[in-house]
Image (cartoon, rainbow, N blue to C red):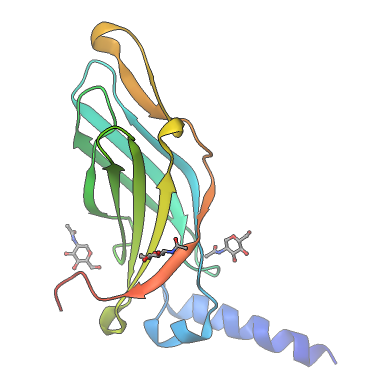
Amino acid sequence: MKLTSVAPLLTTATIAAAAPFIDPVILPMLPINVFNVTDFYAGSIPHSVWSTTKFSISVTTIQPPTLCTAETQSYQHVGDFTQTNCTEPTVSFTLTRTGQTDQGAELDIFWALGDKGLMKGTYLIPSSQFVASGLGTSVHEDYTGPRDFSVQNVTLVKSIWGN
Ligand SMILES: *[C@@H]1O[C@H](CO)[C@@H](O)[C@H](O)[C@H]1NC(C)=O
Ligand SMILES: *[C@@H]1O[C@H](CO)[C@@H](O)[C@H](O)[C@H]1NC(C)=O
Ligand SMILES: *[C@@H]1O[C@H](CO)[C@@H](O)[C@H](O)[C@H]1NC(C)=O
């Protein structure tokens, strides 16, 4: 009676202990279609030519989140962040401002699965969640939307690492 409930727990524990990050071979067994972001921040630094972004992301339910940070040169407003690896280097991201007048942003999360390809999740940030404040040279822009959110649209795409 108890054995039936113990078996799946042992499987999960064995997987988590065996690999610091998930083995692509077991990926098809996992119901991955959502990445979860926590503590998201993006902003430009007053009196500087730099923008920063920082967040944690979970791409599986059985491993701890990985930290993603980057900085980019951009005066007074949040700029575009080119592809940057997170602490767990199979996970990377880009943050791209969208449109000429509608300055929202697209956050793309990539999870490289070796020769199995690449998972990509996309999250759109509306322009209303970027707020400018300050005067003169202290003008800067901050992301003011939810700190925690889900990246819902996760799909399998071709490798971006050129192999
Ligand atoms: C993301 O959060 C949802 C809701 O709490 C949960 O069902 C899902 O398993 C989580 N996914 C990951 C990859 O953490
Ligand atoms: C990012 O990680 C990938 C492996 O997922 C590696 O091939 C690449 O060299 C890394 N890039 C940088 C800039 O560290
Ligand atoms: C999900 O993302 C893909 C590209 O990554 C896009 O073609 C598709 O329209 C998106 N679907 C939704 C519901 O946003």
